[in-house]
Amino acid sequence: TLALLALPLVYSLVKWLLSTRRPSQFPPGPPGAPFLGNWHQIPSLLHCFKLHEWARQYGPIMGLKLGPRNVVVLNEGSLVYELIVKKANSFSERVPMYIAQNHILPEGKHSYSLFMRNDYGGRLRTLSKQTVVGSGLNNLAPLQKAAATRLLYQLYQDGEHWVEHLKPWSLETPVAMMSGAPIQDYVRDFGKQWIEDYNLSQQLWIELLDQLSPPVDLFPILRWVPGLIAEWKRKAPVARKYLLDAYNGVIEQAEKSMKRQGGTFSHLAIIPKLLRQEPDHFTNKQGLDNTVFMGGLFDAAVGSTLMSFQTLILALAAHPEVQRKAQEEVDRVFGTEQLPEQIELDKLPYIHACVTEAQRWRPLGAYFMGQFGLPRECVHEEEIGGFRIPRGASVVINQWSIHHDPDFYDQPGRYDPERYVKNPVGAKEGVSQPGRKPIYTFGAGRRECMGKDFYFQNARIACAQVLWAFDIVPDGDLDIDARTGFTPAVVMMPKPFKVNFVPR
Image (cartoon, rainbow, N blue to C red; front, side, top):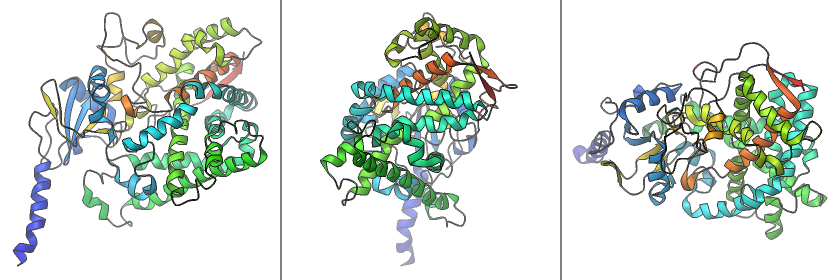
């Protein structure tokens, strides 16, 4: 009788052990340990450099084993095009994320933007077209210009605490876009505490998305570790509270904006529009799901603007010759009397190149090993180059290796916007790859970040205005080394550094 009772346990154990073996025709990769695979070989910090070392050794496609999980790593842009873009039906689903989908936002486990199912994707794309792409994006330009102008004033008044001024700037336009709240009353209505709480929610959120710390998606038995030991069980409720409080704060401001009937963007803002169509949109039985769905769109618009813009400031301060060339372009187009306008930004190719090159040079998701920049799940077995990608495998876009490929870029470790002026994808002379994108920071294919164009427009406007008004001068030495000058955490952002914004 005991033997019969033990059979299911033995069967499950044997099945799990077999799943830790490398599949046949799997892409090449480093040999791993029994049961663990390659999991123990990946450093807890600065993972991208180990992946890059393996990429140079094993080639454009690489296979790893993380316990029972099969992971296929794409180290070349052409493979991203062949698989993620051309075979989107097989690679448009996200890998399940247990902590996020079951403990932080269970109501939105299929509808939040990062891990929504394909059947929710059409709904998100429809709303995105109204706001963060195409004509909707053009409507946001005046708000982005106003936010950037306010940033200039704050930098002039108190340049020492410039990072603190970037925090409200990064949120102003998304808040107006979602709620219709008057942008000039944004800080007053929301308060500095809301801004701090929202940024904290994003920090906790990103930490808990990392599948290697803790690796509960790789080793499900860890889900039952008591909360006294498992730190994630204590952090998850805190992250949930901060996220929902932030989303509800935006909804409350939208309701106030409608009552005032004078919101800067209330006639086009998303939440007022939905509330006019369905007054109980956020209070009916699907209300929390709708709140999380809208929160996902808000987070996509905000994205990682704050951290990415800090990297851009660091790059410009560390490369005064680049800064001077960008200022010459701005001065040539706008002169000394007129602040840069969105309508003229198509005349600023070097400014756009500066923004793009910062994303290539130090991609925000390069340290994001646990999610490898948020992997796709292979829903149908596929083959490429004689290698087999098993159903259920995680497929990863290796941002760092793609962005720092010496076969594709001249001096990839150097911050050089000129590469994007000479070539739209930054390639060195005589090199091309089918379907190559300028950068992969925002992903590719159906799951490419909806907020990509929003970020570029926002960053271009702010960059042009800051360089029109100031010289960005280092205050002490600047460490731009990716290993030592950036936080060894989940995302790649600069360690605190000092610069002076000197009026021109």
